[in-house]
Length: 273
Image (cartoon, helix red, strand yellow):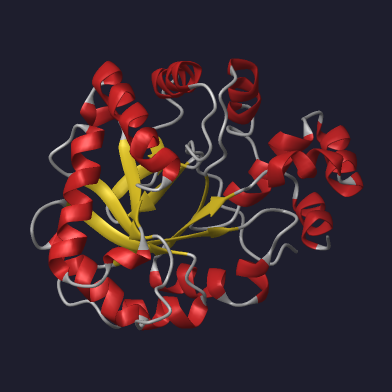
């Protein structure tokens, strides 16, 4: 049997919100116009409502692109995640200022989810999330807060540190070829505590398409290696994948990872990689 029970739903929970099991990332956008059009097409498909960005992506330009997407499709159709750099966490004012700058670039009065981008080595995980809680959540600038690149120990500390907000997401590197969240107990902790894992770099910059086991499984189920790699992730409880694309054909391939699930025996083959 697979290590985890298979989640058959293409919709996951972040807090009390339903978000698509596949979201779209915005790191290293090369062509802003085509990226914008592809994100709009993804939202218009009805299969995707989640877009991930960060203040550091393109020095804020990625947030501006997401803002244009929101204006084209409507605010209520997009669940937006953004992230604040660790050096902002010197005091609450600096965090609030950074969040407000992100909101301005996004063209919204409140972001759905804001994350600590990674832990500041000069602060504890608890100190950072408490500061984010006060500066963003309690001041009505974010509906939810969370973390990124936190290991199981740091996530547990974060979960035990907030007073008014829940930690609803930990965004980490996770793919069929990079299973640290499974090996380290992070995914187990997230499932137990109701925290959603947002998996970034889920396609390993194309490497998943070259792996012989992924290719063999893809051939067995009549899908592409990209679709198999994404389906493996979203089959896990509490896991959302956030690949990035600027191409319509690649978007179509990504969306083809939804609406089905790998057989248990093939999930086991992928777990063994």
